[in-house]
Image 1 (tube, rainbow, N blue to C red):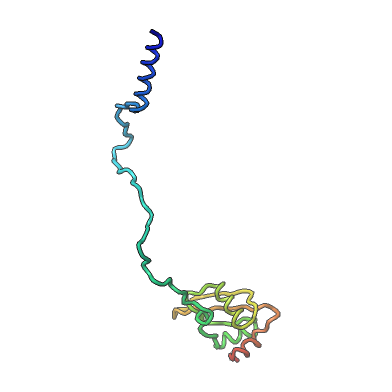
Image 2: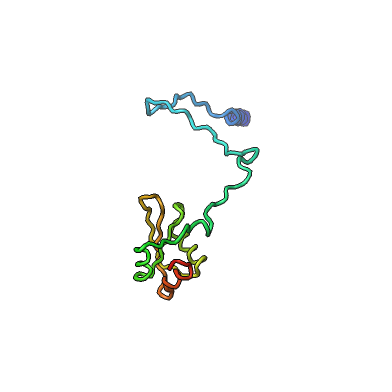
Amino acid sequence: MGKQNNKKKALQVQKSLLSGAKNNKAKVRTSVHFHLPKTKQTPRDPKYPRSSVPKKSSLTKFTVIKYPLATESAMKKIEDANTIVFIVDIRANKNQIKAVVKELYNVEVTKCNVLITPAGAKKAYCKLAADYDALEVSNKIGLV
């Protein structure tokens, strides 16, 4: 009789495991607002690329610097502060300007200050390293 009882219990346990536990309790709501549950968001998987060619950067070493400035105040900077003043592309940043000046004119730039003029042009003050002379470099460019 003990074996049959054990078998019966085992069958009941198996049945409850297969069907899952019954939970008839209602979910306790802690808020008066109902929010829809979050659904699965699949990542984009396009059938074809939306642009045939990736966009090319329009800032090259020849477009970053527009021209050197040859005003009186710029000439004073060349003579006194070992600094050359350039008008540069509005989108260029200090690091790009430094790199381009180094590449085009073979000089080391220690500091590059930038401002945007009221006219909307970007002006870069490139201070050259002590072992380079701004006057020589400006002569080579054709400024002086």
